[in-house]
Image 1 (cartoon, helix red, strand yellow):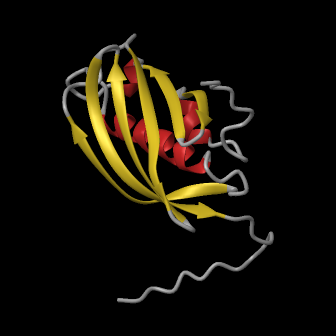
Image 2 (cartoon, one colour):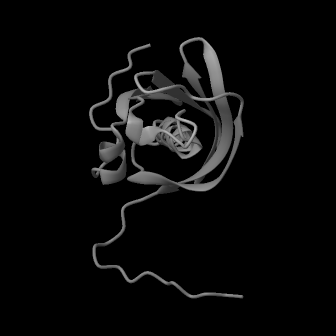
Length: 147
């Protein structure tokens, strides 16, 4: 499989840049991202923080889904369920998230993902993502709260 990807997202995502996420590729409903864990990624037990693991899963699954719709300007997470199986690792560990699209509907894509540290399965996830299409600049958003 050719894992080349020109630009994973239409716009830079500063959070992912700050984290140090590396995009390995996205094609045909599968995507991979990686991260070398540093001290800034640790929790109080000095292992990779669960939020870091979830972020990688979220990004890998969204990219996998988006690879099926090149016209989409992005994808947003509708829901996500994660099961943590073991610690992600210590500083210096390289973890890889793999996302796979399992079903595509008109505006939604259903995905699954996993994070691995070498051969060790760290976490698994399932998520639903909504495709976004380009909208006119300056478009007013409706933030109506309905109790």
